[in-house]
Image 1 (cartoon, helix red, strand yellow):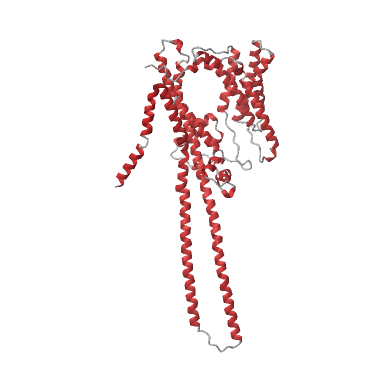
Image 2 (spheres, rainbow, N blue to C red; image 1 turned 45 degrees about the horizontal axis):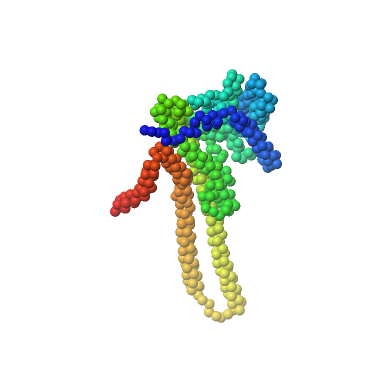
Length: 515
């Protein structure tokens, strides 16, 4: 089969590839541009922090003398060594002082930032992020110059020499390995009340978090024992606490706390905008990873069919073999991260909505009690006045020694008993209505925190409907179109025409089953 019209590989041709990986000034100055951007952003962040420094409360978190400090020292040593090797390479190659300054400036800046992160009494994570950004930009430079050419037939690494290789190794180590394996420092939600027992999730490195290595302790404990006691389970993160979730979300969901009158969906999106932005990115990565395998297999088969034409190939076959294995791996990591973030958002939403419903139910109870107290007071006042009037008339009649015949005590008791019975009946009727109303309200509240809450949380995967499925369809149709041509539209038309059939089939089956 002729696959010359398959997914075009023109972007990987010799001329375009050489231009992308050449030693042009734009690529060589990538670390310089990154350092300039970092310095500008850091200056703005420092000015803002200096202006609002009085608003902070509690103690500043410190890294201590543990693993975090050890990794920071490692970063500083690697950056300083890369700086020294950069100067030595520039001198050996006879560069001008301007070229040496441009080549060593980013490493000097990264070393400077790394040095000020070594105080065990301070956190200074902002400086760590900027140092990682500079070293990552330098790593990207050498990946383009010296690693990607190894994947081609037409390119060769542009940097050679023992000193340069040592420098590249140090840059890769400090820019890629150190950020992946450095543990995170626990930062309390409430600095005045830090968490006493930490959850390993809060301090796990990026590598440990991505592969769930921080769960090894509890997993092996459950493997060795018949049952795991409650005191051996990990402590709840303070970011998952009910009070913190209430403070974070009520200002966007509760009207009485200052939220706007709008659909709860928009309030939840405002609360979880970071989480859903992460989910959107993970869905895109997962969609692209799903097609790396078929794409790489197509390229590999094309190489096998035309291996007797070496001049027509640019990318080496081991790249496609690596993509066949690496694509599903990346997709699996993205999917697991999606599940983790999505499930955590689910639990947070259950806590927030439950608190919101019961907080509002307490407001309803207080308002109802205040309304019930008002009629009782107004009904008691006339009775007291009437009793006083009767007492006064009796007293005046007694003083005047009237000879008028007074009603008998039996008739008085009969009248009062009938009035009391009528009042008791009215009171029982009112109590019965109040009880029915209370039961109805309790049922509504229970329905809100069970069925309705379940419906809300079950709709958390709307990203699959509005992003994942359409993106999968678009990529799949394009992939098949470049392979099969116009005939792919026949399949698309059949999908569209037969889309209502499953719903019709289900309706018919359900009606038949009911009969």
